[in-house]
Length: 184
Image (cartoon, rainbow, N blue to C red; front, side, top):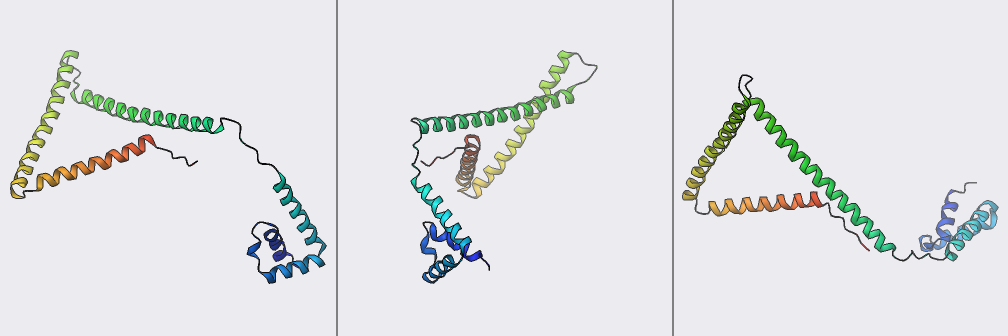
């Protein structure tokens, strides 16, 4: 004899979800419990467990538990924030160090004195900045021509750049802060 559906019904019937069984299933279960001592003992044992659980008093947390828990969460949040900031500064530092080493390698000439090497680095930095200046001048010419041909292009450019900066700021803010929300 299979006990599978009856065992499932026993757990459903003794729980708070009695409405999940139809009236016909409850009658069939009662008939099976009258004839099967194994299922009857399971039914009685499960009913006793649920009664014991119902009699167990609720234990209130110690005073200040919520405050300590919130302080713990705040500490974790602050530690995560500091790890993120340290990682951000480490990436920036490594990038600057790499750029400096790159400039030193480009400008180094073994026959030059240290003073000449430093002067050579300064010249390379000036040359790189002058390249950016040339690009900036071409950009001004292109945008100036576009502004004369399309009257709203400056406004659209400003609005587009501003919206991109706002989105970038929000994304970086979410990544850096990694805000946790606690529902109490």
